[in-house]
Image 1 (cartoon, rainbow, N blue to C red):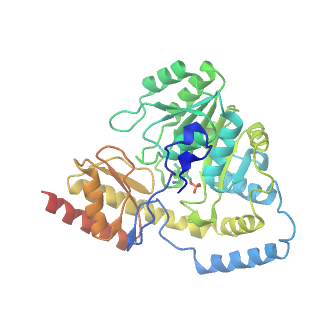
Image 2: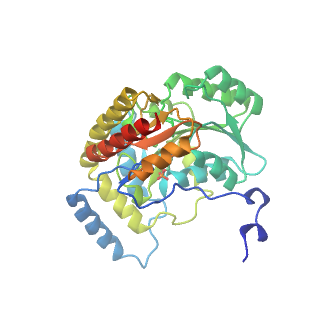
Image 3: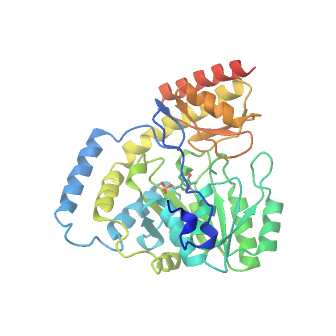
Length: 367
Ligand code: PMP
């Protein structure tokens, strides 16, 4: 049997495993930060209509620049982000993972480096690796916040070409103050002009406002977003960014032509007609998130303050055993490899009750 390592594959990919949370069939799935609510019927009907329209022209390539979609995304950001954004400041791709990959293709690459503050979203490092960009793991405090002095020192020392910030951060749930982003941006420009990416995949769930307001006057700052979380459309694969129009021009140098299918564009446009309904679930999920924080603390767990639709909790001596014991009760949560900690996504009221009941039983058993 041929194994990967028998192939003439790039050296840095030897011995690596692909990214991916286990996709197990259990009753309660709280492991990938999805939105638990299916799309409402009227939206499903509207998607069918728009996709049928698009299907009539599937013999043609789609709008390569996705102008209508980017305009609607710019409208959404302008309506909710506290800034006026134009179509030319917004770019879209198949999930924010692809947005981040395109950014690293354009601004990272062989001989260049990217720095992030771990633990954070592990795909940042993996996308760096996949694009031949050296990954530098910057520090966090024990409470998972960013130590600004240590962050600035790491940037001065390593002079990365790209800096990743993530707010709210996955897997910890912690959000960043605008002043931290401003200081990191200044330091990254002083070390060498570098691109600073703020991954705001979960920002709609935050107690804090979006950092989009920092874009003005900062041409090397990018904010990435997704329709996978608050919009409840993870299966759609639609991510986007807001930045200076020059950054949007730069990613067009590396994007594959027609990367966003006509079906994707039609579906995303239908979802954007229903932002009111979709985002209506956000308030409920925030309340459920706060419930998880409160009840887990009540059980004596250490819980990291959360601005996202998930909660990091611990500390466990044998994290794997706790993860397995919860799974044995039909609830799948996530072990992100943060020592002593697990992460649970805020689901529906019933799902969260099932998780909390499982936790109470597990903790009792382990006493
Ligand atoms: N950024 C963060 C912080 C995430 O947690 C995720 C999804 N887990 C993504 C980006 C990617 O999401 P998508 O590609 O679905 O937009």
